[in-house]
Length: 120
Ligand SMILES: [Zn+2]
Image 1 (cartoon, protein in one colour):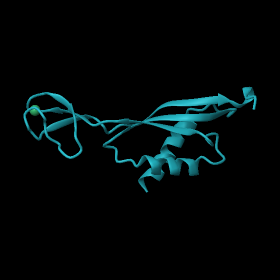
Image 2: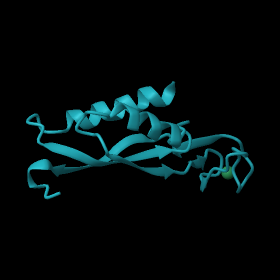
Image 3: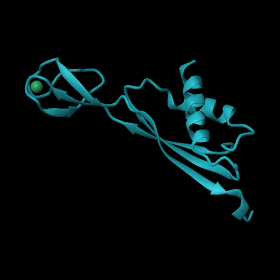
Image 4: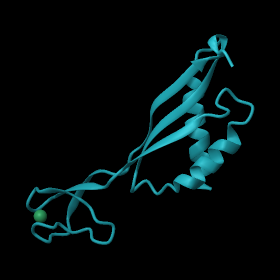
């Protein structure tokens, strides 16, 4: 399952960026996911929630920012947002496009809070 290994990869990234003394817990993880990355967000969230149990990431929220597919036409150089159903240039109708965004899949921000200062 694609989303399962993806969720594990995200957790690995977050855990590597946490300080080794491990006094902090993660409250949120921000992601950028392109529409072309082929990720089912609901499925990713489900796997993530299952995998973070009993880790410093338990209870962390995934905040996903979708990145629309943008392309540049190789014929007339105009840039545009790609419609899922038509990979053609709206200006000249050419079908040769250079996809410039939409394949993103990255962790952009990790929100931590120090459990020592927690009041609740
Ligand atoms: Zn064009």
